[in-house]
Length: 431
Ligand code: ADP
Ligand code: ZN
Image (cartoon, rainbow, N blue to C red; front, side, top):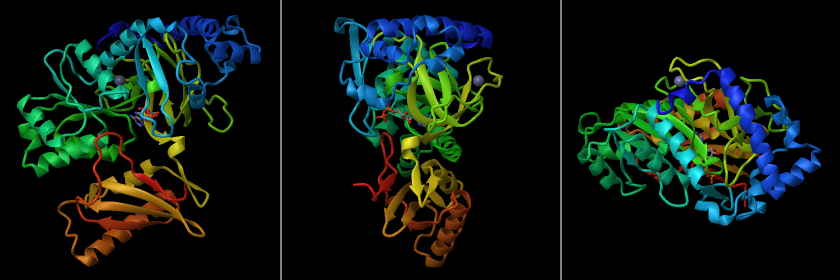
């Protein structure tokens, strides 16, 4: 562990620390951010009215559009001369949101990222290949500073140039790979295609994969090809970036660093706080952020949070796998479908490759189709085998999704590979 005292703090102690910080943070936000001053006034709430952690529920939510409405610096709680870094989200769902950091914010972020690396077993002596995008996206610099902080050597390879990545991985004896899970899959496939024997040519022991949803089946594939232990990690630019939550060696859910974040799950429709263990939208309050404090920030990410103890010794609650954003949910003839469910079905079938697309269209009714690459070993030209594979997938999908999805199989290599966040859904009903 990088900070054993904080990482193993008992739940009661954690709650005490959270409450102390929450009270301080509420006051800080109200005194320094006009938006919060107004919101608290409208809610007839004074920071001194926050006496228990449950009182957090009285604080109004902050949503993504608040950031856009205050673009670019409206939520700053410090004068601009205290800001030392500015990032922007990748804007998957619209105009980018700008996030600013003070020196202390960068320090906190680097510490949380160092914990993230330590949770994956990385430290001095490790060679970290950081294949996240460097730039406005928080992935590159977030992992970079965390790797340095934990004492590893970092290769800032960034995304793309896949052949060179593989050469570096072998020659530099990379032990820890950081990338999106979709790029990790592609790296594995490309390694085999280039004639590498990943398990003996590479020295990989762990991977830190996040920034997009991925399934347990995808994890199994990545681990099998690259011969490493794949850790899921979660974050978002509004909450510093990556480093909000990570899996320990148990790989059973992502520990949220709750000394820095107060987390609640709410019913996305009513905004009501749900009991622990119920699936809902995660809402985060940053407990020590200086430049851009966010109180009860609605992530739109749906997950279940588990408070059971973990044998690793960390008492921080865990996000059981993130189902995806509520924005990503497709409504097909009134039925809710998550892209992650489709992935779950596809990746379970060895004859199917790693790449797929989900296409939604409408003539009179909604039509869902799934275009999937077959595995390299699959005899694509044998029509009968193709038809029978498609048919069995259609029935698996129907069983899980309860709506019909037409399956189109395409040859191995036909679909575009992703180097960052994969774009797998094509919704032709929009626009
Ligand atoms: P943008 O919002 O523009 O995509 P971010 O890079 O900040 O910019 O993306 C954060 C989002 O990425 C999260 O809200 C979540 O939906 C997704 N995400 C990040 N990590 C994971 C993960 N491990 N599993 C699933 N989704 C993730
Ligand atoms: Zn653990």
